[in-house]
Image (cartoon, rainbow, N blue to C red; front, side, top):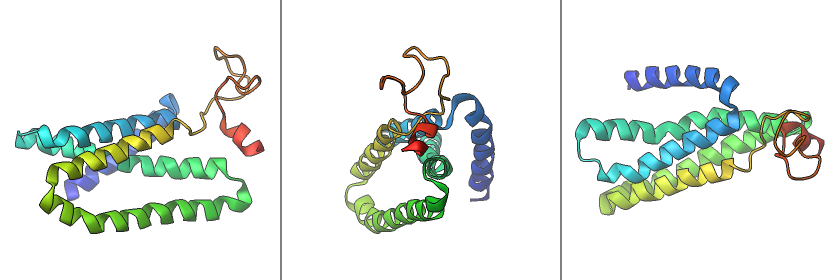
Length: 163
């Protein structure tokens, strides 16, 4: 448990460093794709060491929780931020409480299907991540022109704040 905690702390620091270069949205999508794919592949891994590594990577979506809270803070106006962060965390923890109630039964009766179901749920997080606003600044260089001027460019955090 201590090794897992130290590793997660190191990965969070790396995550903070990578966010500057690839952006929060891309990192959220990547972490969910990695975790979901590992969840789908995990029942087919028979080597114990490889299974441990794939299971560890299956939990990569845990790193995206901080990024999700960061998006919540950026998107909502100041007078709603505390409530938005509170609701985000409450829904996340409430969902995990409900899901963990069924995991024991599912692991006992249908172990493989449990990992398939959670892999699909985590992959759906990557799909939802496509709707997150990008970090492109208005007027930046893009193939479609400035973002949001003709409706074809990506939505930026600043445009969401104006709405």
